Amino acid sequence: MTCKELIIKLKESGSAEPETEVLLLLSHMFGASRADTLLYPGKDYDSQKLLPAIRRRASGEPIQYIIGSVSFCGCNIKVTPDCLIPRSETELLCEIVSELLPDSAHFLELCTGSGCIPIAVLSGRDDVSCVAVELFEKTAELARYNRDANGIGAHRLDIICADALTLDTCTGTCRYDAIVSNPPYIRSEVIPTLSREVLCEPHAALDGGIDGMIFYNKFLSDYKVMLKPGGFFAFEIGFDQANDIKKLCEKFGYACEIKKDFSGLDRIAIIRP
Ligand code: GLN
Image (cartoon, rainbow, N blue to C red; front, side, top):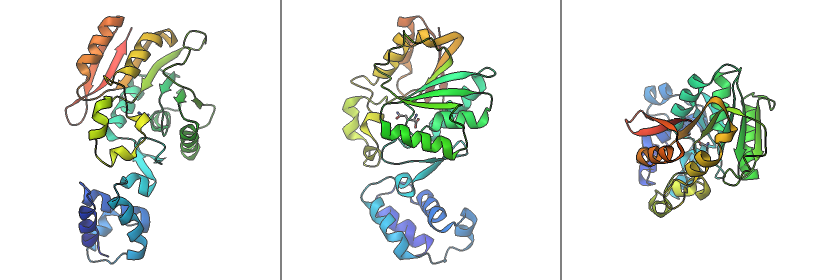
């Protein structure tokens, strides 16, 4: 099967970005580079090897789960249906956090999923350490695998299994330079309307409750005590949530700065007591 034929197959399978997905698939299965596919468009790839992947893609499974990994801030992150697929918008959150963290910072990350956020930040900042929290043990295991595979020591990134929504924030004595999260933030009623690919991702990683704000509400009401003086919250938010976040910040007495993503959409909230 040639590159062109594969593009047609993926298009027929319902892929919105068949060209990108073909490059990912050919690189993963045959080690083909973008240049290879451009220079040798007639090259024949083993159809027998490709067919199971095409079948899975046609059933609606995201290409990232089929390939089993994504590139995120230059790190290779293993992904399975137990975790959200890391998005490019979240890379921006990592960049901003890396810039804002003081020297030798220690930060808390909530709802870590694949572990992509702390792994990306710690890969670029070897003075920084983090405690990351994940609700599901199987997903926490995946995050630990990703930490180890990316050469980050367990002493720098501790991944614990706990519910960020019910965590007792008052009894511990640990304080953090920042509390970072890309929590589930989609309104529950919107979930059934999402694409079949997104619906393959864990619902718990998407669903932010009736108003999509359940996690931000909990974090801003209860986690302030865990911040060091001068510390800040950094959250990814939905493109339409800036006003709701600002209102919440007013309610709890925080200053809030919203930053836009590469598409010009509101995406990151930096929040300070
Ligand atoms: N922190 C992970 C990510 O950004 C998981 C987020 C989530 O499950 N909502 O990909």
